Amino acid sequence: MHCQSQREAEQLLLALKQRFQECQLELHPEKTQIVCCVVARQRDSGLAKQFDFLGYCFRPRLARSRKGPLFVAFSPAISPSAATRIRQRVRAWRLNRRTGLSLEDIARLVNPIVRGWINDYGAYNRSALYPLLRHIDRHLLQWVKRKFRKKGRYFKRAKAWLGKVAKYRRALFV
Image (cartoon, rainbow, N blue to C red; front, side, top):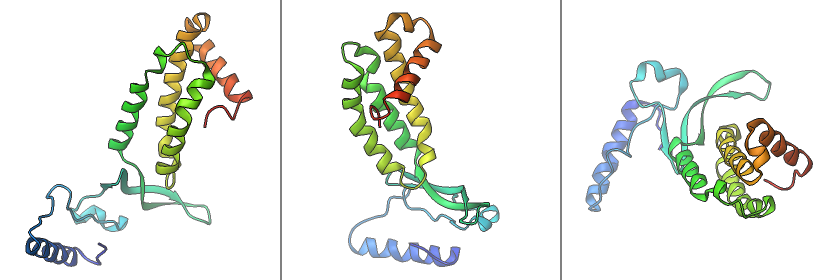
């Protein structure tokens, strides 16, 4: 709910609690909070400065206006907990152990899932996904090092090989 003042927000929260009690429900105390979304007022408000909702973290971030200069906006990006779940899922794939698969097989396995993550979490702040995509790249590097033993001894060789594949076969991975 959007309110104009902290007092109005507190009154609304109290009214919601009463209404929920009438329906024999209760608000979760950790998940129900008042957040100040106006960036200029945050210094002195004493309210929470961010909140997580449906895998997004809403907080003040730098944004570029249509005319070009940067300003601070209250906007969403992938939440740290959602990013952790994604990293755990990538780790669970155990790509480095799948040396029997070709690069095309791995691409078929990974692409639909990663494309979904990019579509879901990249809608508002795509650059927040870059660390996750680099995490997937590191797992692919481990796969290259294990699959091709000569490249595996040298991190630079494996990275160069993967870079060439990415350059010449752009459609292979998302």
